[in-house]
Length: 338
Ligand code: UDP
Image (cartoon, rainbow, N blue to C red; front, side, top):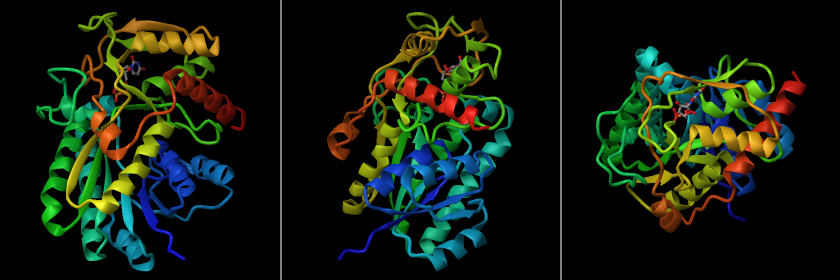
């Protein structure tokens, strides 16, 4: 009988992390969640338990705390790590740059030291399309020049990727996945996006407006050089993004070195189009206005994801409409049990 591999998932109680935990368990992995719950809460851990029918081992630890991390690594066999734990809001990072540099960089270096001292040599890292800043051409592929990031958040992801390039000499193999814009929720509506306080991201702001928690959505700028003037992004269903991590684990188990993949659908959708699709698929009229641009935003970014399609053998299964429907089901369910 082969021993099941155990994956440590930092940030596993968060949005993308929790969805990835589901796909990992379904793919036959054991999972250990490490999360400080600073940007998520118990409700996602409860949702995981309901969805999977088992309690996933969980340690409440901030990854910057090397000693606490090392204790976990000493007491558990860990075969690979998926590192989600990080701050992720572009707008907030412009206002609180030091929080972002401190949290996102030190949690990575502390984790890497821990991996090195415990001889764990496989890492999947959550990177972001923000590393491209405003790309010269879209769809953007992994070869695109990395220019100055538009926000401290984007800069932290660039710096983390650089750190990961440099630690190849330590024998740690890495896949960095450059996420485009994850949206939606698990089709069961048992887990989903649960921002604490006012949402920074578009889709939770939309669903919270639709349910009456917020008065009005503000679309940040309609004077961008795009067809309808609003920003264009590549929105990907969070379960599809989660699946990419399972594929990346298969890949890293067979390949050494440092590898980078875009994870997006390849389609650009504007903020206005997304709002229209939400209204249409859920038969809801959304109260929104046009406001000024948000600092740190780029006009247009969407993925050339052919490398992930061809090398990881990954493909998205859900449409944007599925994602907007699942996001709405989740919002209704989580508010009804509060
Ligand atoms: N956006 C918006 N209103 C909001 C939140 C976001 O118009 O309340 C826009 C934002 O300007 C960007 C897009 O929605 O063009 C996606 O933003 P989000 O924060 O979800 O993701 P990002 O692309 O910044 O990672």
